[in-house]
Length: 80
Image (cartoon, rainbow, N blue to C red; front, side, top):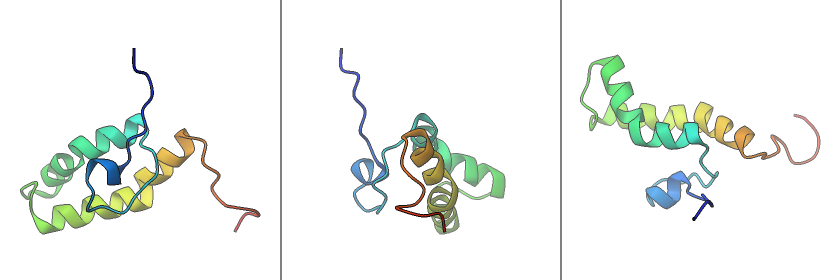
């Protein structure tokens, strides 16, 4: 059975820039995030505002969860 998972936002959507390996939370966000954001703000999932919010939430929150879940150091040498 194939148990290795190395997908990133960029590997699933080449137009995106993020290369942090997705955690289960990141994968769920990738697949359902547009719909959830659209529902919360009352717009369609393909609205430009929804797309912008999706990117901002991923970049400033979900990517951090992905990094923590995959054991990526939050800083290279010393804490900032």
